[in-house]
Each structure stands twice: as C-alpha cells, then as structure tokens.
Image (cartoon, rainbow, N blue to C red; front, side, top):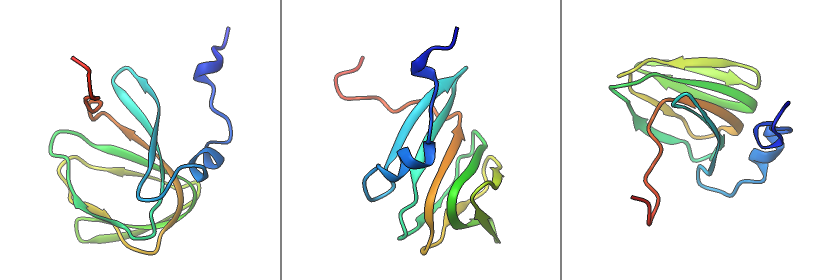
Length: 114
C-alpha cells in the first residue's frame, strides 16, 4: 500500500513555493541517494566539483545554462543531464525554473544532531 509521505505531487509547484537564493527541499533518500528539489536562482551558481561522486540533474521547468568543464549545455524542462564525478560545473546567470538533483552526497549534519 502506498505511503502518502512518499508520494510527491506537483513538484514544480512545490519548487516555486521555495524562497530565493538556491533554496532546496530534500524530498527523499533512496538507498543513500538524495532527491533534492531546487528552485533556480537567476544569479547562477559558481563553479564546483565533486571528486567522489556523479550527480544527475532533471529540469522540471524553466531553463538553465549548465557549464560542464568547457562545454555549455542549455537544459530545458524535461531534460536530464549527468554531471560526472570530478568535472567542474556551474550554472550561468539568467536561469529560471526548478530541477531535481539526484545526488549521493551524504546529508548535512543538522544542529543538535549527534
């Protein structure tokens, strides 16, 4: 029987309700893989890389310009991109919308947690 806490509807609408400045919402963790919902900040995201793991980015709506290494890729709603481990990547200014990040990064420690 489905658990209502594991059913997510109108994910793009949920992202639009997030605040400004790269807000996110961890929807679930499935066998150590995080499913994180992000609302795009039009200011972009500076370069970063993750040497130990790859990520997957599923655009839900809107568009971004993702730079992987020295290649620019325009992603629109419905597009999916794998970001390989160790490859520098950034999101250029001017994007909009929301995406779901599939990410094995360990969850951040919360205040007061062991």
